[in-house]
Each structure stands twice: as C-alpha cells, then as structure tokens.
Image (cartoon, rainbow, N blue to C red):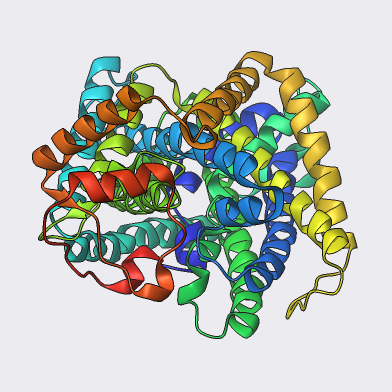
Length: 485
C-alpha cells in the first residue's frame, strides 16, 4: 500500500463541500485543490531527504525523535495516538455511514444516532478482523481499493461526458470566480485544511522506509509520479462535480457523490453509494492497521505502555494497540461533527509536518557533513515552512477553539512524558500497579512480547525491562520481521 494508493482515499468524497464552503467560489476551490497538491509535493520532497538520511521506519515520529530528542518525539506520538489517527478514523467512519444511509433518507439528513451506531459497528467489525488476522486485513484492503477506483473513475468519466455535451457553464471564468462574499484569508486557510485532509497520506511511505527497495531512487520516483497524479485526479473529480451540480446543491448535500449519481446515473445511481461505501470501508481498515503499528512502535521504544508492544501469541496481531485505537475513535465519534473534525485533524497534521521539516533544516545545521543521498534545494523546505506558518496562523485565528483544543491536548503530553518516560526512579507501588495491569491485559488478550532479531533490539526502557523479566514466564513467538518495520 504505497504511493498514490495511500493518498487517493475517502477524503475526496468528504472534503469538496468544506473546500467550497470556505473558499466561496468554484474557481477558488479548484485553485485550492491544485495548490494543495503542490504543497504536498514540497513536503514529500523534504520527507524523501529525511527518509534516506535517517533510514528508520516510523516517519515523523522517528525523525523528530532522532533530531530533537525524546520529548518532541513523544509529543508527536501522543498527538497522533490521541488526535490524528482516531479523528481521521472517525471522519472516514462517519462518511461511510452517511453514504450508506443517504439513499435510505433521501430528503433529509440521516439521524445522528443512526450514523454513529453504524460507524461504531463498522469500526468494531474491522477491529475484530485486524485482531484476528493480518492476512485477512491486507486482503480486505486490496479488495476494497477497487471501490475507491470505481467511484472516482465513474465520476470523472461521467463529468467529462457532461462537459463534452456543453454543460460547463459553472466552470467558465466569469461564473466560476463570481462570489456573493469575498472570503477572508482565514477562510481560505480553512479551505486548505479541508483539502489537505484528502491529500493526507503523502508521507506514508516514510513509515516503512526500511522496507522500500533502493529508497534513494524509489522515494523520489514515487513522489514525482504519485503527487501529480493524485492532484490531477482530485481536480478532475471536482470539475466533474461542478459540471452537473450548482455550488448550492453541493453545499446542501451530505453525500456529494450520491447527489452526483442521482442527477446523472438514473437507475444506476445506486452504484455510487456502494462504491464510496466500499472505499471508506477499506480506508477505515487501512488506518486501523497503520495506527496500531504506530502505537506498537511507540511502545517498543518505551514511549507508551509495554502492553501496546505485545502481539497475540498465535495470530501475531497487536490486539492491545488495535483496541486502544478503536476505543479512542469511538469516543471522538460521539463528540464531533465531520467538517469540524477535519479542521481539527488537519491542523494537528500540518503542525507535525512543519515540526518535522523544520527538523530537516536544523539537522543540516547540526550535521552539515553528514552524507545525504538525496538533498533538496534549500528553497523547498523554506517555502513549505513559510506557507505552513501562514496557514496555521490564520487557521488558529479563524477557528481558535478547534485548533486551540488540539494544541492543548498535544501539550498534555509534556507532564505525561516526564512522569511516565523521563522519571526513572518511580516508587515500587507504581511499578507493581503497571505490572499487574499489564498481566491482566495479557491474560485478557492472550498477548506476549514478540521475539526480535538481535539487530532489531533497541535499548529498552526501564518499564520494558521490569515487565519482560517479571511478567512474562511464557514462550515468546517469532513473527515476520516486516510486520514491525
């Protein structure tokens, strides 16, 4: 699951409404989509340099930990575990339920409880699948990718047919850039945050750098191919929407692709909600897999409780990490609305991207003579960081509560780090409690520490040392090496 397969996801079925709402016109919305792809390309080039200079899997978390130390790495991990992945999962799950229920409630918004219950049911089902078998989870991902490609292909083809038939009045410059109100800079920044949700995934290849064959050659190649392709597909998809839907129709729709299908596909319109539901179902599965791997990696480094670094003794699946991701997502499902959640997660995403790319500049200054197989022009990270600072500043100004809450949650990781990780001489009662809780978790989930190859064993934290020696008088099972990288 690399390259554009990770980027092209359910975001394109969610974000168009938010981008149009904040940008104020069709033309400016399309500009935001194109520029969003350009910004993703700049970030990807910076990550390519980091990926071959610091050849560790784990993406942002590994790079920031290496460059800035444990505290910054922990804060990135903390925000990812508590905010980024659960919120993204919640948004995709809510999109799944909206597209499934919209044909059932064609003239109104699907009931709040119905969407939440269906979203939670889907999430629990896929958590069970991922707990049961890694192979089954990857097969689901492969099969349901077809739904994503089918939906996008159908939308683009039908939209191009509409344009060839002369239905492109809304796309002419004089109409496309006409607006009832001129959007503020803050609103345009929020439009970029909405678009960035659809592009999220451009850095996923860095999470498995150690598995990439010849990263010096293949990382840049993946960027040069995937980012322009994704930008092209997303722009064409939005052009297709506007070829047959007025801005008012798009803004009033809770499932844009369903409304598009009902207008143009007639009796075959049922294909659209089915295709999008398949796409979002696969998206939930993919994010569950990735987020549980991040929890697992953080626990293996001693930054999260050791229970999260354990796997099922037979199925080799990280059950505790999956359960934590599922529980956090269900909590967010109950308290958030889709487009606010997108602003929320995109703000924290951009914050982590900026910190990581700032780390690239700091690392060049700190270790100027270090061999860098890929070295991007200095203007690339500088341009990205200038855009990053403007985007986050205006977003915080426009949505102080949404963005401020994200910052506060991230900063709560500071005392957690000093109490849980940095503080080495804890009272014996704390270790006893942790050991007993871990033992209960092991008994409930049937999990043990995996056996690593000697080359993979990092210096363990004190938590891990004590737990491994005192809690686990059990057989440790060997699992496929690539699963942990």
